[in-house]
Length: 527
Image 1 (spheres, rainbow, N blue to C red):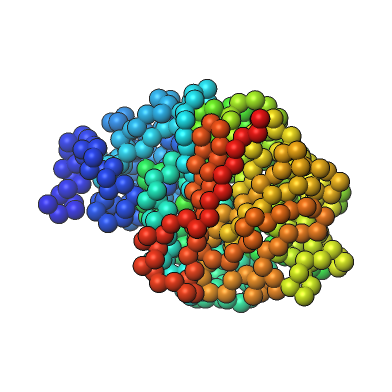
Image 2 (image 1 turned 90 degrees about the vertical axis):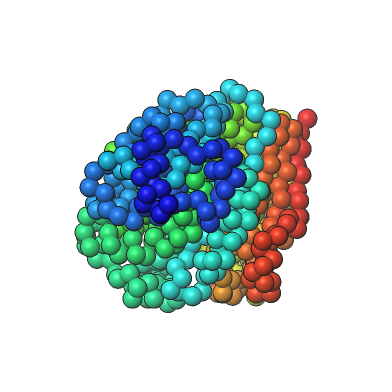
């Protein structure tokens, strides 16, 4: 039976699921699952909702639908041509494995059906949860300085072979800087030749800019994920490059917070390619970049989100770029109301494990401008003896409040996991400034980059990530500039983190297929 006949037959049968052992066994592999007309598909869930972002190979004039155990939920078009769609199914049962499928307006299947499970209710008591976490997966192949897409896919597939319950991608899904010094070299001129250049006087969607965006962004996201994650809820966080610039500041240009065009380019790529954060009853709906009227369903959040898995895990996601302020001692990477939300979640009872997942790491500096720390690079080492132009003292003050609140959590492990620095690492913070954290030291992890290829950042910055001045930070795993990811396993009394690495400069691609952890960290709940 050819592809079209198969899909039509599937629709005629009421889009019933294939046998469970067939769809589940093929799982996240790309090979034999029939993608049909679907070019990419990324889902997220909570205990009662499914939200999916998808694109298709043919423009659909009328809205397609998501079917969840046969119940139909109409799609919402997110572009102007009918290639990109968002699907939301609400009022679902918690911790239930559903059979999902997509169909066009005539009822013809757009792809094979697949399983997707909702999370437990916040008051449930699951005994285990596994998260796959990494950073920096972006990069267009025309630039030829990122890890080839085939190798990124192999790393992703190896990570997914460990059957995580969720995937967390921390920033830099897109590299296409528009104004910073990096925009005048490397991938940006090559991308302009391939995709065209933006007209910054026009809106992003509904103009010629839309085609440019799709040509430049699509291959960095859709080509990597395809439908590999169709049964794995994803949580994407944006960072500086996702706002189409590098974090830089001098007397000519300060790149953040983003200008109006870059902000809208970031929002447009988010709208088309990956899901926002679903509402959470403990997260205010009025936080910055939340409840925008151009997002459906209501009360989605673009920058500040939650992963809640019963009473076992609560992850707090926060973008440190979009709402950054430049107001000296009162400045922050996140707005005051967002900080209050983070502090309240760390102080209140509920989940056994509460994790901070900021887009900008704590515990390390690379001498960049947009960091929590004031350190500059000198002789390949960080120093506080050289003032960092346009750095804001309020950033460090906010850092101190957050890590102190984490250390003060009773009966919990204070843990931060972040990305950005293209490295794998782990350390424990015993003190920040005059604040003693030794009673419950704060662990910080660099999750590892998926897409970095040629030219690791230390070659440009002058140093690899290192502990900054003004804190007591013990690197149990000094930062390593290699490709990798982590798997974090949560049980009621501990967190076990396995670190994976692959050196694209020395190792053959075949090593990825059998990649195993090179370092394991086990953290037990205090008391």
